[in-house]
Image (cartoon, rainbow, N blue to C red):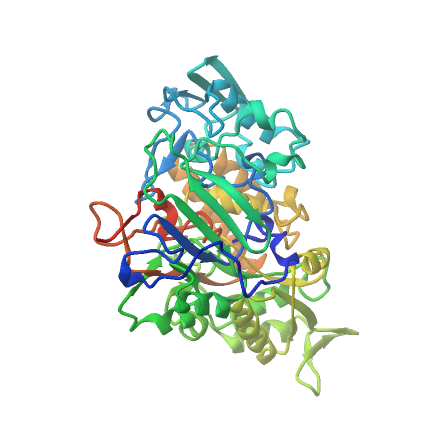
Length: 536
């Protein structure tokens, strides 16, 4: 899950004896879930959000459990209607999107869903007073209007090809959220939505508990109680799964591998756009030096990280776009080349000292690299990066901390970060790289500025011509090859281990989607938990 969506999680201590409200833990073989009933399921995830309000960014990529968007994704990530009764009608110039809303939909408090709620949601997100870090993704919207109770029209400033993908974001009820402070009101922790589940309890740092919405427009879920246990520590999550406390959990590759021989469990591998990278703050005299950035980009052994850290469950990352994506710019792969990295540093005047660490004038080639405490994958990536950097004569001093500790230091210290969105390259790259967002919370954490990249990002988002968009994102990737904003390390497959007690009608196994960086809460095999049924 991205830093910007989990700042609150790290402040809470891990409760290793998590109270889930379950009577007893049953084994999967009896057809019951971990909560002890055939209609209940408990899963372990690593992080929790700051807020459950879609107005502040919760669920913006879909699958929020509590809410619905106008559209949603199927298992193959194809858009399909949700609160809209059909896909939108799009004008010939690509600047007007008309949505016809589904009849008879109610919020979980019994109030009707109408076009007013859609207009309220989008206008509120775009309001400058709303603390939504992702509102730049809706930059194309000029206005949103209610034509009648069941018709909403979006007018765009320019033809924006992925706009329909942005209408998976959840719709909030105006009659509840509109009467509160959007940033701090009770709706942020006690939401009301149209989704398949209703939140019954949120014990910060421990669990999110849901019950089925019996009046859900898509049909009442078979899983009546669903609990997400917040277990930050990977080892504890694996132990809880092994002991029968959990029906499923997201695990790093080394721990997922320990369940390989378990007859009562299945491992699911979700392909992702999720990457791990190292920020390179431009305000730091070491990481802000172009020669250092270029050298680090060549000094890291990405293949070794994929093999040693991910056990092969992933691929080398050379930028925000995975190498198997049609948006990837061929030829931007970088081979591990320590000798070339050293030549770059030598030529730039960074000379090795007696201790093997380089200096330039009085500046020592040393900086601090933070990772989120309890996250083993980030820890292992950080340590591997530091080891590779040291071989080139650069010292990365690895530290761990909560986001509350890390965030104030991000201007000068490096961070083992992550990101990635499969829906469209604009969704991740604009927030990651555009100079207008430098230092804006967890957006553009490196505070990077590259005029060519800025122009390419704007050009690619302001057209619906595929070839023109591809050329823009190719430019971004080639510029990052010349002048790295971050050191991209790996793209990670997400691994989930689940009790083999569940099925989806018509499927032999549960399914996963192609996932973004934000995972576990909305993604995973429980992306469609409303459709789960116990095996007989």
